[in-house]
Length: 325
Image (cartoon, rainbow, N blue to C red; front, side, top):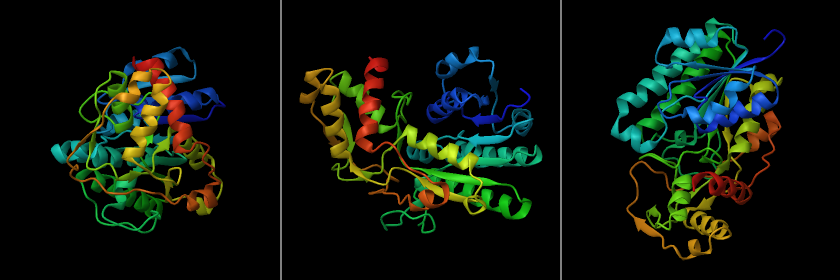
């Protein structure tokens, strides 16, 4: 372990965390995964257990002592652990707050005390709330529209205070609708793309909330990995203790997204092109449109997203087809 940079990835058995583990292991970093498996899966990290440069710590970020054990000797923290989902936060705001706010603060305190070099954390586009301006620019936000959005905004406030009060380096990445390999299609709070893929593969009709004209800046996982690496390695003092949109910088309506899914999946099963789409009511707490400006990340971090929505979706569909059937 000496001479190796050690990265702690909280929520490392989840969708984004697993992809980060895989990437940094391939770059020969020493990776520590910290997860309680409440939403992540052991099968996601099973392939990594044989690596000498991988360590699993099963624990909960709501327990400060477990956080302290996890950060011991660590150089960088990539904090992905959270309870996602707007509907989940509306149904159970207390648990969402416990994990996303108290757990986040535990990790900040433990990381600061352990002398961690930099703390990169998953922020959220939900922070933009009721702001109607497009594209979304980092310093212009509205009022949060859900308990989840409040928790992710509080994370940013805490990170800023730790920077100004303790001189602790943090960078927040406001993720915009991330999708890709290993995203879980199961469960009540499954993300829309893997859920729809699974339904289409089974020839079941996906249900779009509303008329389908809401739009999202869907962001492929490899763009997110790039942003985490840039945030971790940047030497630019201007780039630290701030937040960045983590997206491609384009938007797609839900109707178009389903059309692309049907088109790409039909290459494997032509019957999918005939599956009908159902429209249901709008979902509480949903923002109508989401589109990120990625100018700040390009300027300060040299971000250059490699995958457009359609390019990423083609890759994701290939993975889903091989793994979800």
